[in-house]
Image 1: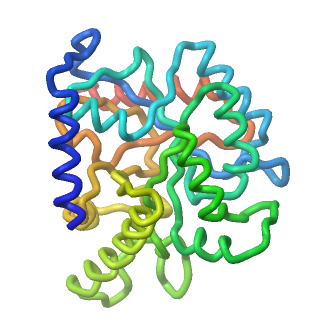
Image 2: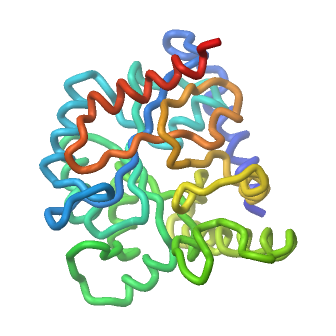
Length: 281
């Protein structure tokens, strides 16, 4: 069902934009993808930056001529030949923390920016049943997520329903010890489809993109997710992305982890340098 829905979407994209040429006839575009988790005052570190750091990032990107885009824009470029801004950039926030609603959302509206939140379905369900609260590792409720979605500056994507944990020998989407092919594929399909169905029920839209929990991926897993209808996947691998007309460029997209105290300008430069190293003979 999901594959059929996404096939229909691709056709609609091509009908709506297939005749449009890229503004500069660019067949290749560099796309940096920044990876964030929380924006909070308490205990900043690898997975949490201060609100003032987030604001400085948005100011820097605006000053340097970057335009934030969503995955729907990226898909329209690859599949339908639509144009992208001169310097596109994707801001991604993993896990769907409440700080995205409390701290990030107001900043995005202030600076006219957009971002992608990859949701953990079970966490959104559980925190939707709790009284409103703040603090580290608190997840956004569906009410908060949908308010951000309805604004148009936030896009919701899939980070699994309940695979984002490390316990009992499990880690994200890794195969369990002794798990056979059928059971592994069935477990992954059931989990990601559960969140897809919930997103569709709440937003009338399916997630196009899967963000790998803990960044673990494999060729086998890529194939399963493609069959589930996902058009793109996000890893935790460091680097820059080259967008082309080839849909394979949307698989295993690299990201730039933005941690507390990091220099964004330096991170972007280092990411671009990975393209030069990969192209070296």
